[in-house]
Length: 304
Image 1 (tube, rainbow, N blue to C red):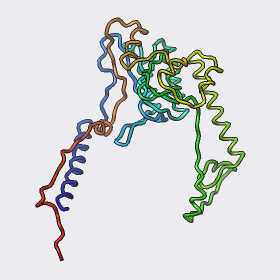
Image 2: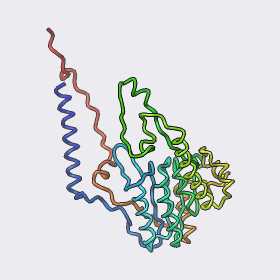
Image 3: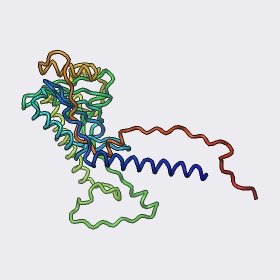
Image 4: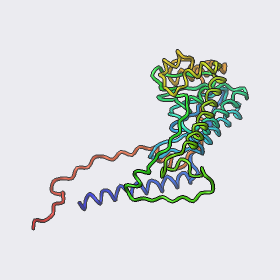
């Protein structure tokens, strides 16, 4: 038992020391991976991984989220870099918030208006907000087994009133307006509040339909038939006109180079933002060797 505690303490101390070392090396400023020395016409790659949310985004030991601010920064960098002739958006995301997806999609449209082509490359999943963004690209490349689509909007609330009553939890609310606590888990929603929520969902849904329709050059009625929230494989999406080609990441790179008129093997530049030292450290996988204590070292309590 004592030995086990020492081993655990040693591991913790080692991790702390490694964190302090990383902070000292990187100076808290992070590592700038943007612009890996492009020497000519290049394909810029922007990766959208994880849930799409507003803000700068983050990568930690607990997961990755794609922040709209970070992605927009990369798109604007690409617009201002003369060496970047075309951009590939590598998408691995189940979607996210409507507003964050709209922010990124708007910057994609602005990048295209600036004269640069944009190709979407779908990985495992590029659904909902991920497809919202992809629909604004010049071309979409997906694998046959990619999960995409999910054109729709969802909003959820929970009613925990029955649970609170069983636990003896009494919630008291002081509010400035009738609907200020709308969606509170401490009570059920009213019929009027149900309509308010549904109207919001319906409005965002119509925005989604209009975005896909204009981006893909499809009739709104045609999009609406596919927009019941279902997901499609990449193969199905190709048949329905939601994507343009089947292929992997490198096929998307080649398609982007062709669109931009780049001859030969294109130079590829990662347009990742600056990373903090903790994000850099958390991306390193630490594997400890298995430790098996000999039998004579195992702690056993003394017999009475």
